[in-house]
Image 1: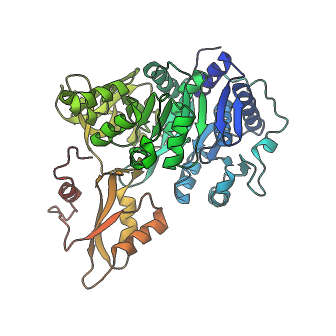
Image 2: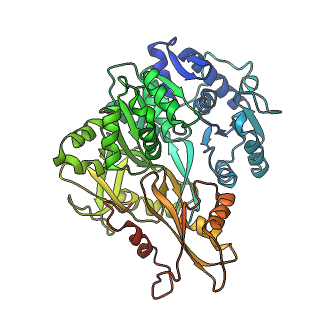
Image 3: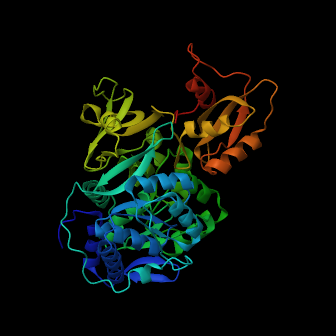
Length: 518
């Protein structure tokens, strides 16, 4: 087996250990490594034979959808993995970035797939991964007759871009993040180093497989472990699966962890196999971490990263359990952890000077995990890599023990329940209401979501509107994730001398007394 140079090579590593071992487990599916290799080979050959250069996947967590992603990786075709919860116009913009020609979709999202095809001129082919897509061919039919014992013969290039994800600034303008094979290899190797196992690894994919949780699966595949799929984040079902399927590892946003802790079944099960319950995408309540260690044992870990540099830091289960047990270490529960192997972190001021322990500045990174840049945005790429470091736009500090703490955000980006919400995009919708004169959208502390989206609204003189009316307007145009949870009406908004709304003043009113301003 060759040294891994691509994401897909880690699957092949696991297959070499035992081709007959169970690889993917889903409803009615228990595929071996041999079968997963064969299926991914057929997808790869079908893509190459048709001359496809960019393919996308729109699916909930599903073994067949995951195989489609594996096949795209194996074909060295540019991969675009969509968020099934995103609005149509957001996913369409993502597809246009890569010029996607093929969309693999799950039958439950057939209507959305057709809407996307209507909006994206290059999207010529729809393939249904589960065979429930109406007129569209099933994945098996589309790949029928393709070779399954050998993959396409392709030269490895660590700097070849294999994946585009999207991010954005506080205006909501999407930026395409260019991921190279090197990034995936450094990331997976880091997880292999910091997540050892004394039992067979079994990974529960409950967060979207098309994003970070799907990539974390590769360290389990490299060890010949199992990946289990769950489409719905139903707390009772997840708790039962964690216990009965002897799950060792899972990744979830804080909101889902909170749902599990609040469910009456949480303390009715035992979780002796659980080694790593990893929480990421947003800060986690220290109190909830304490409770989670009581319920699930010393398995809680925190991940810190972003699209441009995934999983830059890790707060290990041992560190969290130690902080829970020792009041003198309790402050560590607010930390995002120490740098992962292969990644260097530092704190920098606005002039590019690296700061000593305890001083606050921007968290910056150097790593093979860092993106190659933003698609067609050289200025943004240069700004993000000023002074030879990747700039996270998170403000924080490092303590004397080498742990990093995120305390604020340089931009106004809101992270609610693990999803990015761009205030400018929400404000545009609220401004469209005829009764609204001005507004500001900010993130406010929320025990469930980490941050909740709040709109502060100034109405036109004599005009009227209700909070429910504005929230419904946003839901209709943006979906529930981006819509305000609450709306307040103020008689005036704080402004600078030049008339700019001072969001910091608004935000500080809601964050007064909080332990972190994030």
